[in-house]
Image (cartoon, rainbow, N blue to C red; front, top):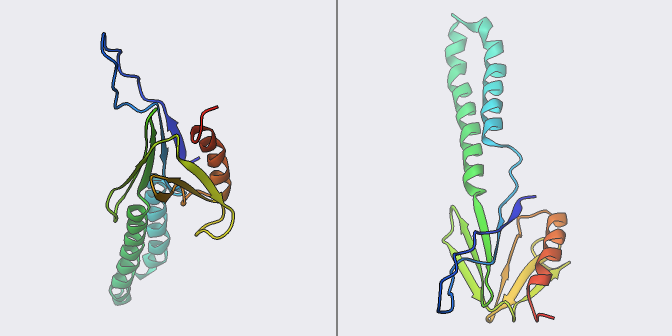
Length: 174
């Protein structure tokens, strides 16, 4: 799944005064799924280059080869730039940090500025909107007068699993 719970190392206990720690009790990292890793992209480009070059072997020494080379180079450059843009646009990381007294959601992406949201976890309400959101089973956190989305880039099944993990963390403790 393209999310994981991170258990940070607890800060050492301070003697005497009450300990104030900036280390979260739990942290969740979410990111978009990558179906083609960088290694796969390199292999794909090499295979594409080989398949394009194979028919050109017969044209070596012919003036036709020089007429085709700019178009082949343009094709390979276009493929490379499209994949590069896809990787750059797909870099999104959402971090949900949970302390006893606050919860923070930080979203960073390549083309957008860093966005943060904080609230008291006791008053945060987790909602899943089966219909009406940008995606089916859209998850939102509501608190401190704002409603924020979390994990909109996850698949529908992954969002349904995530909501099961988030619900017990927020609201009144029983």
